[in-house]
Length: 132
Image (cartoon, rainbow, N blue to C red; front, side, top):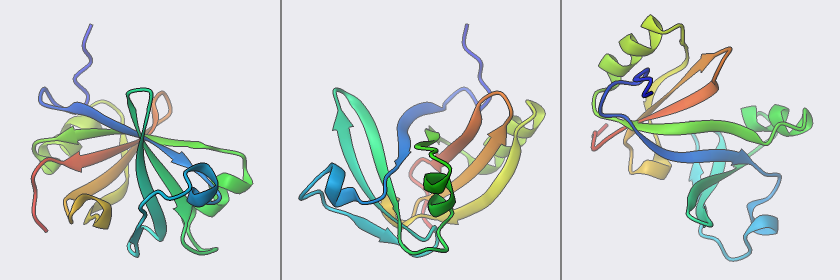
């Protein structure tokens, strides 16, 4: 059964994992600094699964608190066609917006947003082909 919580066109994109230092996990990986999210990220494939490695850019990064609590799996990400329509659909299914849409450096300034539900945890939404 398909649960279309993020709209019919939504497709799985990646999982986000918190790491203390990307270079320790993936020496030589190309990283991107995102000043809006206060993180550095690198994208790798782990036996066919796309993974975003996320390290805090500084002590004020929200990823710092996750690492201190031992939380490594930060989110799953879905690529969506229309951010506003997707957020409306999410709300209908009990998700709460925890980060409003904003351009993301790691995705060529495509907009991302974060939603949360007690059942599914944190979900990142990446707007397909948008321009900031």
